Amino acid sequence: MNSSFKLILLLAFSLLLGSCTLVEIADSPLIICLNFDDGYHDVYQNALPILDKYGIKATCFVNSGTVGNSGVMSWDELSELKDSYGWEIGAHGYSHPNLSELSLEEASAEIELDLLLLRDKGFDPKSFALPYGICPQEYLSLIKARYQNIRSTNDLAMHRPIDRLNLSYFPYHHGWSAQIIKDRILQAMADKEALLIIGFHQVGFSDNWQDCPPTILEQICEFIAERGLKTMTIKDAVKEF
Image 1: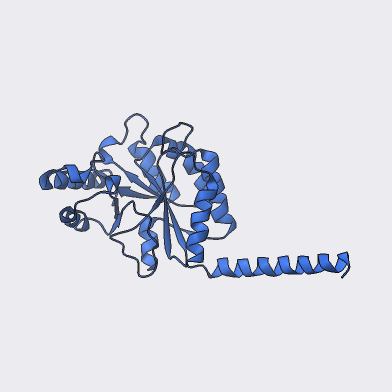
Image 2 (image 1 turned 90 degrees about the vertical axis):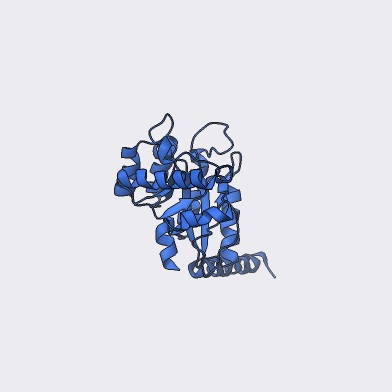
């Protein structure tokens, strides 16, 4: 077999492999939700332009009692995310409490005050992210009575039917490469997962354990866009199931 014929065979195999990959991606049922917790201002400053570039709408979980504090978005900025960019604003507790350290009455006050303040500022949150991913079983009814969707911090595969009161997510950690997130997305596609929630906190340049450099976030968004994967806010994604 001469070298020219070998080259033709390799090219044909490469094209066939690429075709199969495209079919696999097109058939993927996966919906990706990007989350940003705690309402950090660098999300507005650094993450928003990146997501807008790739046409991605995210869910931002805020602690209503800290809005406007140093390093945290203002109410006007949160309204802009919702009204101008189609982001979802979700609840995350009035002061980001560890609910397991509160009495039932204290937990109820935290959750209720959070909701009332968000509504007073013109928001109608449908989703709640558990602070620290922790909630005593007997307190869950407080959240279920007020919200349609509850997000935890466990990274469990989500297939149909989706349990919207126990949504899992995969959080980014400082120091990770974009490839770690890409690999998790590829795993979800291969396993035919229906929903994958990827979580972030800060998007900046510090050494904080939860800080994601903007360059890493852009690589992740570019990867999602190049593969034509569907992205939605949580409140819109769960309607698909």
